[in-house]
Length: 115
Image 1: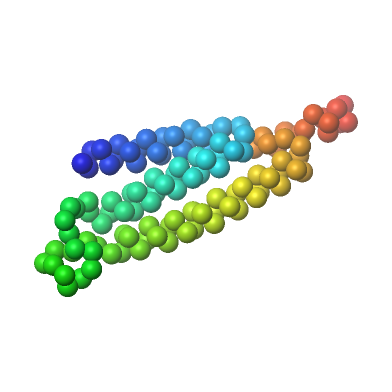
Image 2: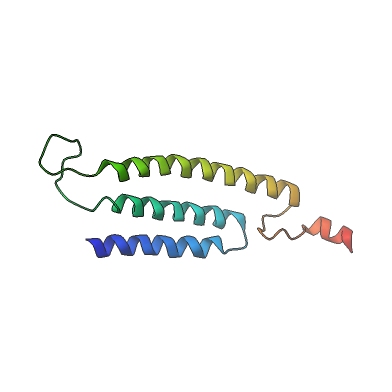
């Protein structure tokens, strides 16, 4: 179980890094989102992956650690806000530059004017 879980986190990190290194803004946004999911899974696994444990204290002898669950919920909200902010930045960059390259090359119209 742990090997499968760790492999999923590793695949999400690898795909996220690959997409972040792309030249367009949409794959970069997807890469940041994938890295956010990988961090959420990693935080969740820090509370030990156990089966049949009580979620609430006092209902059983063994219970699941609530701190990683609270951290993941907070990270989901922060990740959603970050994704919305980056999408707005990408839209603004596309409107200002005329293209969606992350390295800031001039658009075709502006490039002809500078020659």
